[in-house]
Length: 137
Image (cartoon, rainbow, N blue to C red; front, side):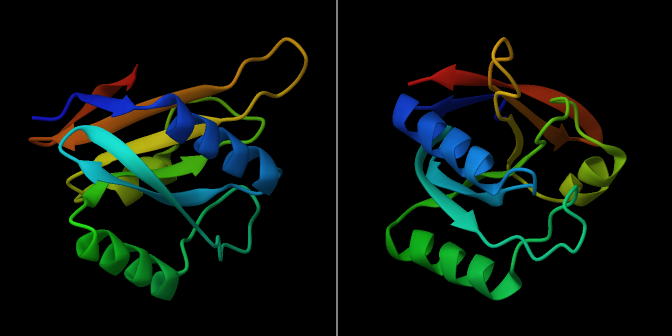
């Protein structure tokens, strides 16, 4: 049961850079890896019309998942950002995440001079929402 995800500093940096680059739109993507360790960031185009929502380009997601397969990696997490927002999942985030067997990450880029970037993770297990610890690697 995955209740911790190891996110090395380089991966964390890539996540935050992607989130900042896409702001004020939400960034979306996949973390590939093995077991509970993220090893690769695969940013995906966000096709949502609303800038406060995400919808990963289905074809690009398919290609990203095939790329991970060829490398012997798996999807260890899906991520999206909440620019200017909190780290808690919205109702839409919760509805989206049901049925996915991996962790869901919410990346909150630094919003100002005194605000620090954060990554929050959660996962559904046995019908219950659980927080997933994000550990440095």
